[in-house]
Image (cartoon, rainbow, N blue to C red; front, side, top):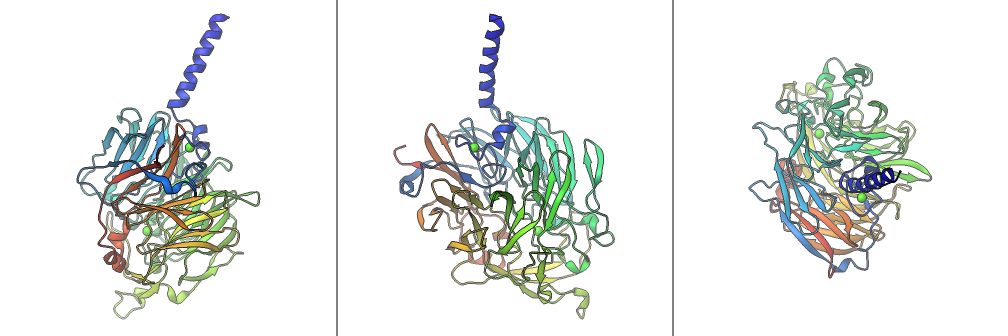
Length: 575
Ligand code: CA
Ligand code: CA
């Protein structure tokens, strides 16, 4: 009996040690509430990016100073869009060119580095970025520019398992942070500009073994445990002829998960090609939020923000779940310029309103049907209607295809009830051209030039009230905003700018109360955590991403910005 009791005590001690070292599903589900770690992309799988810490607040933030900085080194710079993770005293942070580092979270000392060996001929559309990793058990998991997913031992950086998602030579790549839900690691695919087939895949997070896959293009078969699990939608219902076979709808920004609904929410990008005259119909499930039952790999509901897209309004933006009037809702600031409030359980639209000032493609969203009220003459013209059949009528469109919002994630504060949206005001001249699908070649059938709308600013950090649709405050920014947002129970909103500043504003008023120059443009979301009673804030710095590559007139306007690649960590002076 005594022996049994003793071994039970030893087991309990071991158990608590293990709970400290390894990441469990319950720790992940609690991540948004626990201040001692940042285990997930989004500071909780709901993606609220809300830190419950209050030590750094509107009164104390003036004393916020650097604790340490770490350079990713090497000759590889370019865009750094990564959100760091913190667990067990270690920071895990990914960098451009599919690199990942483990650092001592307190001192910044390097523990290990893994550089994924990339083949020639990778085809990332929008810079060689990576947006972060996932933690599960003793593993840190991230995906790569050659469309693989790699799981490393958190302690050593050694590869534990590695799986191929798809063929990089067909245009597949992967840049999003993986999502953990119920022991599964969920990933999407990038490659929407190459006519890939968008999908969500779930693997056993410990082994990498495939559990289910769910295509986001109508007509394609899903699988569960190696068996057919029904096609997505109804073949040819919203896609004509054979076009669905290279239909795009890439799930390139990853997803969120709400344990209370059991659903994972992934956004799907543009239908392929961009030239909408080549594909009649709504083209499901492009430009949609798709809610997938994590247990079965089946689509429970979808909501299409831009049916029959003709502007590259990828519907990939994060679906952030929150409570509104006692119901679980999701907020989504779409690339098309509208903010949507949608019932997280059944996908029913509750509200939709603009979060940017100029929208040309639609006059609004019909709250009954959930469909946009299009402005038909503002759709790029059909090339077959032109005299030579080679170039359709050019239209000016706002937002531009880089969106009212792009990859940079917003934040939600349950304390203020506001969303903090990094928005951009810009437009484009866009026209259509003929195109046919060819494996590994750009599949657009469109040309474009991004244009500024206002002389004094493009970016605007906006506090948006999901109840009223009102913009409560805004802070304008010269360059387009491209980093994400953090909000805290200390009533602060943190975000970075391409001009290099990490800024903090009062969450209620928008008054900027602190800023720090990081030495290169910030295009990544900040985080916060506590260790031994000290609150830290961290952000990755390194200018790049889609704007310098695709930004037309805007790219030339910001071509003075310098590249970089480092992590900055801050704490209150004297702590
Ligand atoms: Ca946490
Ligand atoms: Ca796209």
